Length: 304
Ligand SMILES: Nc1ncnc2c1ncn2[C@@H]1O[C@H](COP(=O)(O)OP(=O)(O)OP(=O)(O)O)[C@@H](O)[C@H]1O
Ligand SMILES: [Mg+2]
Image (tube, rainbow, N blue to C red; front, side):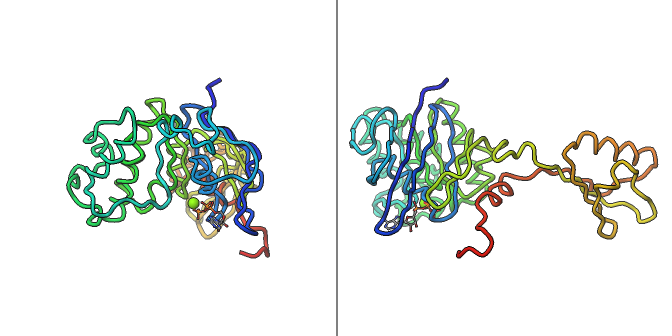
């Protein structure tokens, strides 16, 4: 078993009357890409900022790389990289100056131009922060987090506001860092991002853990029904074996099945023998987003 990078047990945090964290427990293994998910206000940033040492917890245990994050240990800070949900950097510094400033805080920083290249800001190297677009600012945030060549990286919604190309690039950067054995602690509202990057997922809602697993097996996703869709000419009738599970709407057919191998065999062997083309044939499994929405669904009639 891999060593533990982050461990929290029964974590609690209130802001006045708001109970933001109501007993959250999970562990993150070293070298893992871990994603903390949940609706707005679920408590993700509160959790992350407690682990980063920016907020005090009210109760429970927390351990980050073997340190208590509340201790303010310098040795812990040197091994952590951080992308905050909202960050403040000096707007009058250039990209290169900003990266250099943060490199200065660490004993073994990454080379400046390598950091800038990793996030694709080489063309903006000498631009002031005020001149950057929203997505470029966010890339600079990621660059800052990488400046110290950290063992553990906290990324709170790192790709919010990125265009699709920049998002893909950021994913490749994160994959690359994971490949180097770094531990990545991610929060995100993009289920594609989580599906692509995360080894393991914890979902919190209203300050409590509601599900935990891998993106592929979360909440029994691997056992969920497969849906087969196609269109067929009005003049033909489906074979006996699959007729019972079919829903028809005009010439559109939808089959829901727990045994897709058999269902597809029955369907396609029948179609090939009868010389029927199954137009628009599609086989789909529930996406991580489908599962996520199901888990975090507000109960019927509950206040928003
Ligand atoms: N500094 C604060 N003062 C008062 N309440 C706060 C503070 N920070 C967070 N909260 C409250 O705590 C709860 C959890 O907030 P948090 O920022 O941890 O959620 P989140 O999961 O990161 O949400 P989002 O997806 O919107 O970023 C919310 O109800 C929020 O209003
Ligand atoms: Mg947040």
